[in-house]
Length: 102
Picture (spheres, helix red, strand yellow):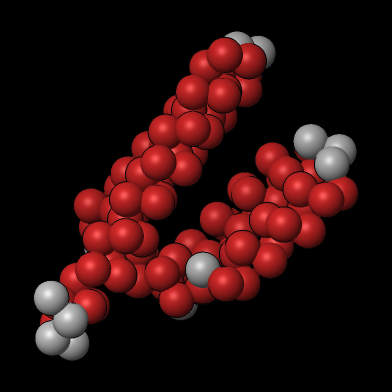
């Protein structure tokens, strides 16, 4: 139940930001990415460190939005993307090692 609520809120957060861009192509790309990344996003809910980092990133983005700080928004989104990428790579490599791939 909590995982479903988490995904619903996380999806709504990302949808709100992307829709606000007014860029329909970006909306489509993000929706496609979200579908493709579902497995990794699911696993992040059960990793307290990754989930905490994600929530802190979201809070930072919102703070900069509220302040109208465009440079801060860009930096916060960039950091969020870097963190997500690092978490995904870590999971991929952990699975690879567990499966005997190195």
